[in-house]
Amino acid sequence: MKTKKILLNENQIPRCWYNIAADMPNLPQPLINPQTSKELTKEQMSMLFAKELVEQEFSRERWIEIPDVVRDLYKQYRPTPLVRAYDLERALDTPAKIFFKNESVSPVGSHKLNSALAQAYYNKMEGITKLTTETGAGQWGSAMSIACQYFGLDLNVFMVRQSFEQKPYRKVVIGSYGGKVHASPSNLTQYGRKLLEEDPLNRGSLSIAISEAVEMAVTEKNTRYTLGSVLNHVLLHQTIIGLEAEMQMEIAGYFPDKVIACFGGGSNFSGISFPFLRHRILNGKEVKFIAAEPEACPKLTKGELRYDYGDSAGMTPLIPMYTLGNDFKPEQIHAAGLRYHGGGQLVSQLKKDGFIDSLAISQDETFAAGLLFAKTEGIIPAPESTHAIAATIREALKAKESGKSEVLLFNLSGHGLLDMSAYESYLPGASLLK
Ligand SMILES: *Cc1c(COP(=O)(O)O)cnc(C)c1O
Image (cartoon, rainbow, N blue to C red; front, side, top):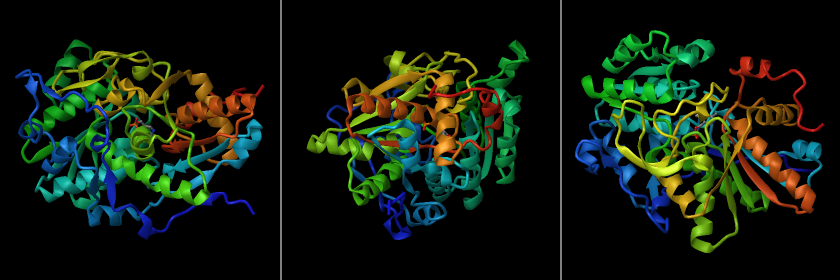
């Protein structure tokens, strides 16, 4: 009998997150405070984020303990399954062995909860009563909303107006868990009001929504800001994905040749990659890492490595990262979670040092890949996750040509059950295998 799913039990949930900063051959350049043009200090960063998260942001410790309360909440959906995609392999007629880590089983349908729970916890412990954040597709807003509910925190979510109108059900998810959602740009902040004065029909963007959430956090009492990707502490929390996958691949009896994930700001990519990358850095293991981006927003593939702001108004610290520019306006692709302009400190340095490959894929190819995955493995993937699937299919077809029985591991970052309008526009006649 074949083994389809490799499952762990609750006691096997890792006790620590993995901090790759401890093992990187070259550390990234520091964050810069744009007001002083000097290195950002921990004290300055603590005006925006919980102190413990700031400690994690600057930490060089290899293992950082997961608080028991967070680990207990992880038990609602973790450990997540590692799945062998036999039916996809058969459809592609490939000798490659394809595995995927299924993060879509979380209550909100994506990996985002892994960091939301940790961020809400540390803020609560420090006596913060109100959090702000932004959301594009709505996944991060949903995750923060349930996480804040668990810890009795107030939440204000600035949702990109475009998504607010196109994805009404995400808004309802956020509201059902208790969070307040505002279409961004909004009338609630100075920056939002300024933009609406200039253009009442402004559709918003992730970097505008970040500016609004940051402004509210610094101007209101006992309030902090939270971010769903890009920053070191967010990537740290997501390593739980790769640490579990590492144990599960060992049970399956394989080590991946290639680890693949979609790339928005880098959190799910880093989450599945960093624990495996540690074996390449420390033991010279031959394993490749592929970040799959949309053609409409190819920050790693076509961006330039330099200091840039994380938001549109220039309120965040300057981050050394591959960027398309903080005023970059990507096309309105369905994978709203991949429309961010920059790639963060850690991933950018690792890319520069040759540890990470990236590729940009067209929306047509990603949806065709998503539909093939749905028809074979039964799960309708999030539009973001279809990028990882498309990249994996490309590798599996290459393996078929060369006759190599490669082991491919990709992260299924989320399901697409709230993205039916996106699928609707792609359904007619889409197929990869003609
Ligand atoms: C947010 C999101 C992404 C992109 O964000 P990363 O930080 O790059 O992981 C990808 N997939 C899903 C399902 C998401 O919700």
